[in-house]
Length: 310
Image (cartoon, rainbow, N blue to C red):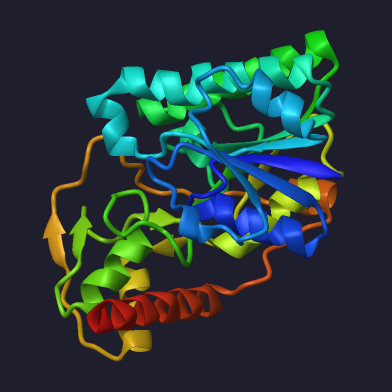
C-alpha cells in the first residue's frame, strides 16, 4: 500500500514517514520546503518539491496513492494573526485542493492533522471531542474549517477520513527558530547558556505529546478510526514552569526564566482526553514526558556539537 504524506519533510511529517516505512508502507512525500528539510527524509523515499496549493493531478497520476496523510499547514498561532489570509490558503484552500485530487484519483482515505486550537479556551477539562469549537486564533479557525471541508467531501464523494486533533507536539527536529515548539526553544536556549523566555506567568498548562507517539497514531489511523475525529494527546496537564524545571534537571544547568506578557491567542490551560483514540485506533502514548524530553535534549545536544565542529 502506498501513502502520500504532504508536509512529509517537516517536523511531524518526517517522523510519520519513518513510522510508515517501519510498518512496510510505500511512502511518497510532497513538501514545498518552506519549513521542512529534505535532509529529514530517508534516502529511499520518493520526494516531490511542490506546493500543495498547486494542481496535484500529475503527482497523483504518477504515484496513485492508496492513502494520503495531510500534514502540510501553517502552524504558527502568532503568525496567523499577522497574515490570516496565508492561513486560509495553507490550511483551507490547500486542503480542498488535496481533497479534489483524492476524489479524482480514487484515494481510499485521508488522515488529517488538526489541532487542539480548534477548541479555544476550554469550557471544561479534560477536553473531549464533543467540546464546542471556540477557536481564538485564525490558526484554530482555519483548521476547524478544513475539518468541515473533509467531512463534506466524505459525505458527497464516499471518501474515508480520520481527523486527528493534536495536543502540543514536541521532539527531535522541531524548529527552535520558530514559536510553535516551546520545548525545542527552551532546550536550545539552555544549551547555549541563555535564559528561556516564558510568555505569561509559567503556570499555564499544556498537554505535551512526543512526536513519535503522534506518528504511530497516524499510521494506526490508516486502517482504523473510520470517519472519526480523535484527540491525540497524553491526557496529562503540565505547566510551562514544570517543563523548564525538568529540562534544567536533564541538562544539569540552573535556570531562571525571563517572564514576559502573555501573547494574543495563547490559551491558559489545555489537556486532551484521549480515551476515544485509544479505543478507535488501538493506540496509546508510549513515551513518558521525561523519556521524550531526554530523547529531545540528546538530539539538540548532538546537533549543537555537530554545529560547533562544522
